[in-house]
Length: 436
Image (cartoon, rainbow, N blue to C red):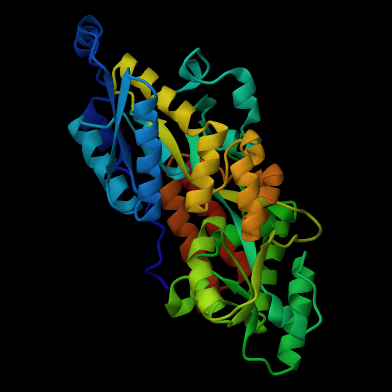
């Protein structure tokens, strides 16, 4: 499992000093081109890099075309850069060559390094305007999404392709053991014990190979601050964190849970009926549905289990950032496009087409989306979680931390390293990365 390092945010640039040397530490501007555009009355061009493929590509193309047709002052050119790893590499290369797009998709973990190297444009002064968001529109965005796009007290991106963790369940297995859909981890273990006693070769709970989000969620449900976003105080090896990880290791050790292993993602084993439950991304419904339906599963989704009575889920996915090298007119145009994408009917359309969640509360009331939820009840659980969804902390060096996090879990799971010892090691590594 050692090859499962998280790479999207890791080593965004070879080093901060290398990038600063290559880029001079300052964003370039194009004031002369800006002035020429105004004099000639030409449209403003916004280049938009993303990593959407398949149906997601079709959806972003449709929204972009809709925006371009809705007005005659801005033309957005969306450009697929492959997968997320390829997109990151394209941003790295463009940062060094000073040829960045106007805007792109970003993972939250990328933001600190880009911001520290003066490549991202803070959006605070651009977001609220006559051509962008009103205060009421900003207030309508779920708090968890807005908190997740801030770094060092500034807003460096806007939420877009966002997901939560949800629990998939196999109703036939639950019925077989006389269990309701578990609302707590204690109930998950109760189901696991019943299945073990019956000699059932299936497991109660399935987890992704990279289950760091599940562990952090449980630790924070249990009262651990984990990493405080405001102070960056690190409490990864707190007693609450130790209890949560030991609970997970015991569940796996007792055969009540397992990771995906060679399947890569647990959507496959769950779809084949190999577990009663599975925690994964809400955007994974589209991956589960075809195989589950083909195998005749009676399945659904629910909010993730509470640990020691507390509800919390972590947000994942991507945001939209604007680059400091763009002209002022291009920056304003990019924010106008972002405002369009987050309009209730458009974020609802995006959610229906892709499996991500709507960004605003108003989108929940769009008639087409209400009808969609009635026809697709598996999308409801993620929406219920939005009111208590939270973010992992963002900080410079986040990619390095994420790799160390996953290696720590591997050491505990594969090598049997003591939970407390492993968490203390990660705690110390993280403090060193952050510089506390």
